[in-house]
Length: 537
Ligand code: GLN
Image (cartoon, rainbow, N blue to C red; front, side, top):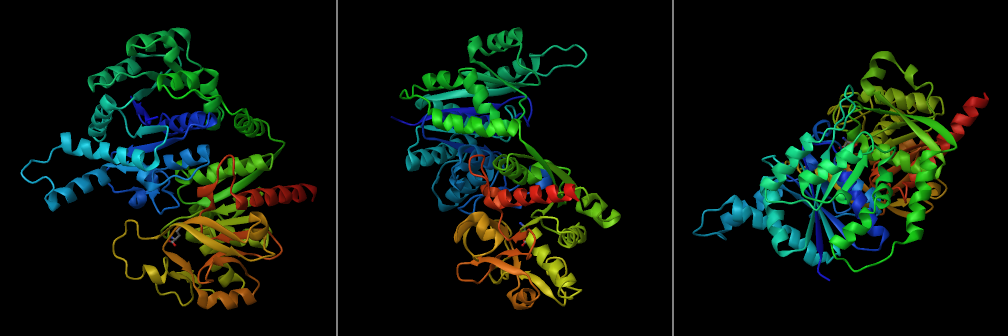
């Protein structure tokens, strides 16, 4: 059967959760055993997300194949439990880049190169490339931005054209706000959104509507009337306790069956085992037996999106420990100003990845506090580098130890620039990126967490542990728990006799609801133990 298309377009405003809707539709189709894959279009002119600031754009998500992509890819992977690839990420930058390259090569000789048909054809051919390579049952195209934006207008035109030849279902994600005083769900903004969509030549087959409360009957009727569809094709997407509930919420509304019919897919029945497994996770999520509080000491803590994967890893690893993990976001600079008092009530401390000098000393203080008070600690990337710096300073007595990222002239460069990074001048896509295999040391906490000798995790960094200091730190009790297979680069370090693990990798990027990151599971487990002993004393 030829590949079918679903196109998801958002109206009115960003932040309605298109990524979660896309992931939930993917998951719903996956419950039936259809091979459904996403394509995400982002209109910005950056080639990828790698050079963007997490404050502006949320976390940069990294794939096995080194792709630095939009954080929605993290949502797809967490739901689907499958690895995504960078060809599924189409950006304005990639499209314009290849059009300009083609023009310079003379591929358009004699013509003036235009948005339509050249750029739109380029978009369509990128989509078709994915189809031809993978031959999936369904491709779900999530169009970033909002209908009416200049940035995505040519892409919307491209999917309109695509749908002339292919069988495609359009879904409009919209919003019905409720004014507190009047208490009524308003549909006028959504109606204006429909008008814009129709103006672009697109008739939605379904409307999914975000709202605070369940959609009222007359809200549904109005949305249906103004979008030319029947009432049952208006799907409720009101606030849920967890985003992972959305596939089930869709199924409860029969959206799965309607979509399968609309796409004229070969009829299949749902895999109840898969579905029950998903439901069981959510049952624990809604009513966990235990509770811990973990402090995340970082520098983008005001914007939770900057640490989306860490947040989700705690949801996943919490479920497998039957535990609710409360996260306390702590600005590292606050520790610099006010000291470590805020860490006292915590059952665990995590220092996440990051770039730049701000807050570094606060993070080091938090690590020292954790080590001295035996608070379970997990250091991720920068958090591992600073764990090594703290150890060098306070255990090995190298008081000036630092990473050369923060002090180029430090006497003791515990963290140094990787050999492979020394002659790099282009910043986009040049870090140590993507999947790397790692050899774990038997008898370490990391090894028992993974229960495996060879593992693989994703990376995104320029600096590394300086092997000239390895012997000294080991002599002072720091345990090397994992290295690259050739033993060249240190990947995991540990404190002895207490849970303190630092990793150069980003295990949070591979954590999924159905397969939580092992090191997070072990960390939450030791936070639980710590909280029990703390409460006993
Ligand atoms: N800034 C550090 C480096 O580039 C850490 C990066 C990170 O935490 N992702 O090595």
